[in-house]
Length: 119
Image (cartoon, rainbow, N blue to C red; front, top):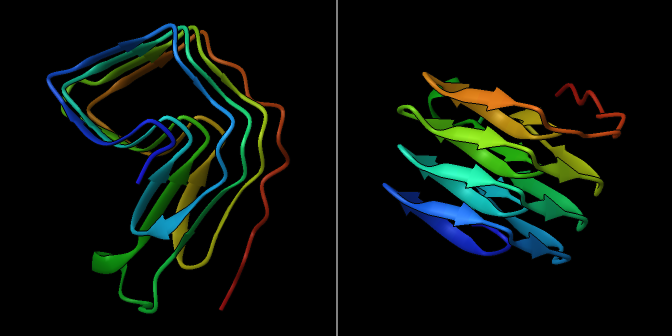
C-alpha cells in the first residue's frame, strides 16, 4: 500500500508527492508500497506511515518506509525526501525505504527519529 501506488514494476515515478497517512499490512510506503525494478526520483512524502502484521515469523514481517515499503530488483530512489513519521510492529522500518534488496538509494533526506518496537 502506498500514498500514490501500491506496487510499481518497471515504472518511473518522478516529481510526485503525497501528504496521505498510509496504514496497511506488509509493505507500506509514503509513495509506493513495493518498488520492483523501478525509479523513484524527486518525490516527497509528509504523511504518517504505519505497517502492521500479526505474525512474529520474519517470513511474514512488514516493511514500512517514508518513500517505499520495499525497494527491490535494481530499484533506484534518488533526490527524494520524507518528513512524516514511520512506525510498525514486527517490521523493517526506514525513513526512505523499509527494506532495500539489490537497489540503490542516493541523495535522499529523512529527519525522523524512528521508534524501536520489541514484542
